[in-house]
Image (tube, rainbow, N blue to C red):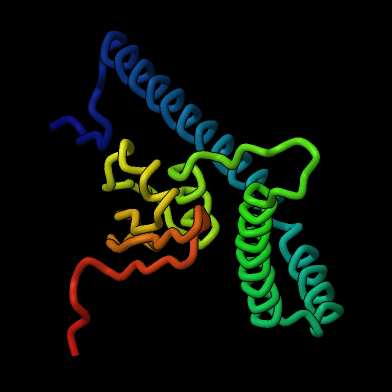
Length: 185
């Protein structure tokens, strides 16, 4: 009986296929390793950009410590006061313009702006927007001469308000606008 061999005997064709399979496996493994190395390099570059974060944090902390006296609420209140002051100033300027327009002591008589324009200017100065004058324009002449009310609708902070602008002796005397809906308790 012939001795048993551990390795089977392969022909040259089988060895060739085995070497081809081994070569393809090595190429695939090498390509996979190359892709992994490239991804690791990209991640390392991205992490390198994040290395500056501790320095940025240190600078921001130092800047905030230096600006500890900066109170945002105080600044907000100052800005609100400036806004309110500018609205009051605009209202005063509109009134002064009306008085100047209606005074007769000028050398050249001044023609006051039309009543509709004065009503719009006053309501804009008071902070109203999207203003609609309900009173017909053809009755403005009579209201300017004898006095009366100009009916208006406007919005303030998004709320529809309806009311009137009282005119006496050609000047705006008062503005009475209220929200169009009743206030619930």
